[in-house]
Length: 108
Length: 108
DNA sequence: GCAGTTACTACGACAGATGAAGTAATTTTG
DNA sequence: CAAAATTACTTCATCTGTCGTAGTAACTGC
Image (cartoon, rainbow over all chains, first blue to last red; front, side):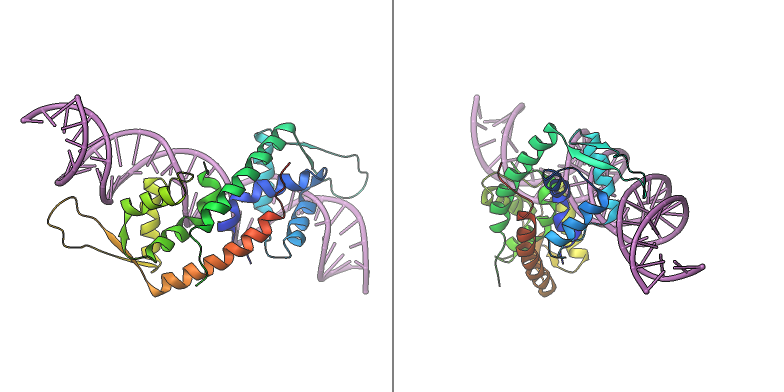
């Protein structure tokens, strides 16, 4: 189990990563993070939805509704070109972070 | 350059890691993080000192003074057994985090 | 028809990082 | 030798992101 404290810097990046595969919505993203991480990380609902708000405010994602005549209305999200650029940056930063943090890690 | 947002989950771990090499104090730790990371991460002073306070409160480090008859008085820190245990946990968590985050990272 | 799942939204609390500013002593440099 | 830089912190107020709690709403399976 991964605590939110250590992974929090990557919540936005994870969401964007999944949106690169196509538009999606909160509940689905949440499930996919859960299964992709093999239950090792479960993003809290409130964290996820507040991330959406932030990402949209920053222009990294767009939200829209699909015409669904049934079920509770979902808010769908789509990554923007700006979001892709941001994602790319974060991927590079991840490589750096791995290098740096690894210097402070030793298996005792 | 690594932003504090992405590495913040590892500030405490980095500090503890350096204290495993022996007792030290703020300014030195700060310098060592800077050089070890090859200037890729510079921990802000306030972040560092507030981390010391937190770590001590949690029983992960002890603080003390050396008898120095010169200079501004330094607060030295030493890792406790509890701190070592916590460090070990965080190292394991790092391995997990690497595995998980990597699934959301692709070089485009 | 009620429990469970899907799909959110609102709100308030809290922790950690930060900027700005200040203190104080020593060392370097012009 | 005085001014600037470096060492070594401390205080405080602010901001951002996460989280717990709670509530709304519709559909699905038994």
